[in-house]
Image (cartoon, rainbow, N blue to C red):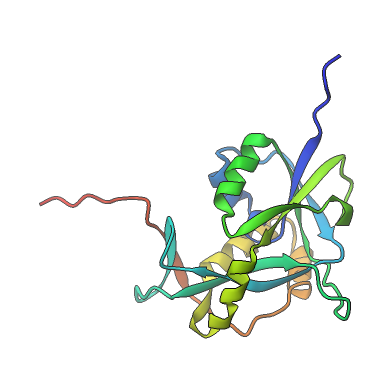
Length: 196
């Protein structure tokens, strides 16, 4: 008798709510996306990415490259804090999908959050939680921006699942003092050859 494989899911709460973004990473569309809530956790903008390193970067409209870009994170609040219970999406993945996602989410670690998911699931649920080394960069938040193009990806993903959830996203996210600025994402892995 064949061994039944345990189903695996990912809880997306930031750019992973976007099927457009997921399709680029996984190289295939996601068949089904369900709404979910992560109980006992909170969502904030506590991860700062060094915008000068990596396969791509965010640029301001004038071509300036900000030193740091703040992105979303989830964390378990202390006993004295009330959790925000962030909303998001749940989608099924296979081992190859997880490999691609792990390669993309290099500032995070994949954790089992099955016990905390408020949704009907028949398997293991993972979420990507920010690594401490990137949270400690938050002391440099004066040199950081919120990239509008990152926010747009999140908002488009939320729009696709309904305005009610877009509003819930705002209500279940700790707001940041870091300013959102118009940006474009530049893929630095593409080398453009110039004719002499």
